[in-house]
Length: 143
Picture: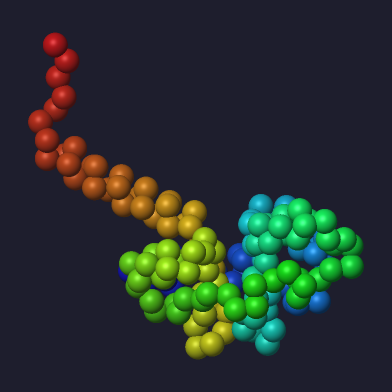
């Protein structure tokens, strides 16, 4: 299974340009119920702003009214290739300490994978495994 098989497609992720106001980024995250906005330019991910980035800037007492994504974004977001394997993705997410990964295909933004997506995938696979065990085990009997 590859990243392409599980990622949310580009039309489902929230993206904006570097000159988008932080207040607008917050509105987008709230409206779409997501924890990040991918910053893109010419169909390439050039940054990412997470809800944590906003909270840390706000917590530092910065006046966010005139700030844009460029002021708080991670300018070197870790990205995955659409053809990467899921195990490699998980190892890379742990290595880079990230929960959200923009996915690229041929250099262009293709989608996004989040830690939540991976947990749901794992839960689905665990359910499938438990069904195999259940089908091959004697029925449970109460005394």
